[in-house]
Image (spheres, rainbow, N blue to C red):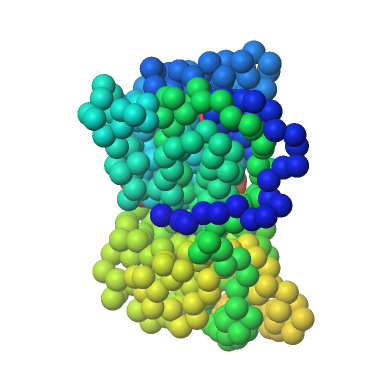
Amino acid sequence: MVSTSIPKGSQSTQTPQRRTGAYALMDSLRRHGVKHIFGYPGGAILPIYDELYRSEADGEVQHILVRHEQAASHAADGYARATGKVGVCFATSGPGATNLVTGIATAHLDSIPMVAITGQVARAAIGTDAFQETDIFGITTPIVKNSYVVRHAKDMARIVAEAFHIASTGRPGPVLIDIPKDVGLEEFDYVPVPPGQVNLRGYKPTVKGNPRQINAALKLIAEAKKPLMYVGGGAVASDAHAQIKELAERFQIPVTTTLMGLGSFDEHNSLSVGMLGMHGTAYANFAVSECDLLIAVGARFDDRVTGKLDEFASRSKVIHIDIDPAEVGKNRTPEVPIVGDVRKVLEQILKRAKEDDYGSKPNITKPWLNQINHWREEYPLTAPHPEQGLSPQEVIVELSNQAPQAFYTTDVGQHQMWAAQFLKNGPRRWISSAGLGTMGYGLPSAMGVKVA
């Protein structure tokens, strides 16, 4: 877990007011821009719900009541994917908290910013096997970026500020805040902590790429005759679609995306080769096998994409760009590793390319693009046309044509893969559980998208 401390001067200079822990929580959430909370009440979290209802009556926050806590976590997840903001969900202690676990794991594996807030038994009862007591802190430790148990109401504002900062920076992910019932009722002299005013020792994500690595990457890109951009969910999280398009068009680089990367590059663009991997297009997979430079952008070389790792892009040099240093080189050792925010790194590469006039010389990738177009014609991705009725793929194609700007959420299974293959999505309009493959995700995530 992350060690925490508050720097001098980070606290608000407002005059302290006597407030409860529940008030401090709701006020802190409002200060972080939270407008929608998905949840289901219960005994241990009732003090917080009492304060939530007061906030809702004032028109400050909307509470969306679900019928199961897992739906609350998926709705918060869908909201976060559609907006890029932190999704927030509430649940009570015991079974309420454990019902969030699958949704938290879904957000963790897909790097979705979420703050899950759970009620807990009163402090004096912790460790006594009290009614509806579970160690949700321990249960969720492997599937969160950080966890907190709020021991004192005076720590509430600091913990909320830290949780939102951790969830939304670096590689995004879920954070858990567990609040004993009596902490919500405890009164203290409340002073708000403004958003972003946190000091987390040991936690400072690298945002900009190393200039030496930027130059090395640009040299490989400029020299490559058969380059391919392999774009994952990190590009969506970073909102890097404009930079991906600019780099691809400047150097005439074809682009393939993962399931999580869908929407980061316009599939109507002639440089798009669609999704790669187990359920990808034939021509995308041929391109991976034949490319001489693979530019991995916010992607993690997972098994559904690579198959046998030693055969994946085996003829290629690799540039790997990712904000999480643990991902760079984890499954494939790159010639040029770059740790940094995808959008920032691509902006650095483009800036250097313009300064040195890279990409303006005669297009050396034209034969490569011709080869890919040949594969596209020989092995097209087409929807089947049955003699009677319509195929599911035909329906999806028509949906995409009729509503190109719509948000699409899926469950998990064959329909998910058909949707991935035939929908043409814009940025943040593809909402689907990829890493965990969570059945039951589609409907509650659509609820989150609807209120976004």
